[in-house]
Length: 121
Image 1 (cartoon, rainbow, N blue to C red):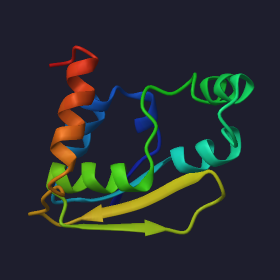
Image 2 (image 1 turned 180 degrees about the vertical axis):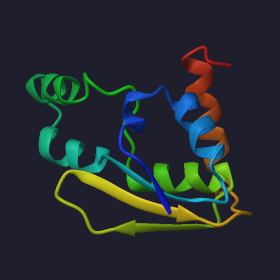
Image 3 (image 1 turned 45 degrees about the horizontal axis):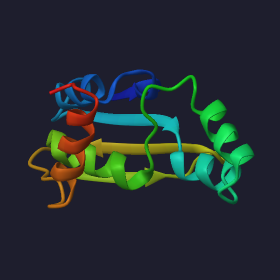
Image 4 (image 1 turned 30 degrees about the horizontal axis):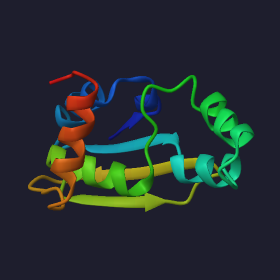
């Protein structure tokens, strides 16, 4: 049975991390807005208007993932296999399974900086 998470973008990053990590060993599917698509469609050039468009687009989200960040997060949680699935434009659908995954070396520094800057840690 696949466990589906379709609202992790509504959770603070550290909460989503704990939730995903608590299901390592099970097969999960994550469905979330794709930050790369939001960036590409709302921030065509660095104008004041574009800045406001991006902020308006992300207002309802606590943390928006691109594929690289979601993949690294799932690996850091301990999933061994992460696969991106086809999806509608603007959405990111990823399945993860197995155990023993390890995040890429660059991941932990970026994650720690983000959490530190939010005073989460």
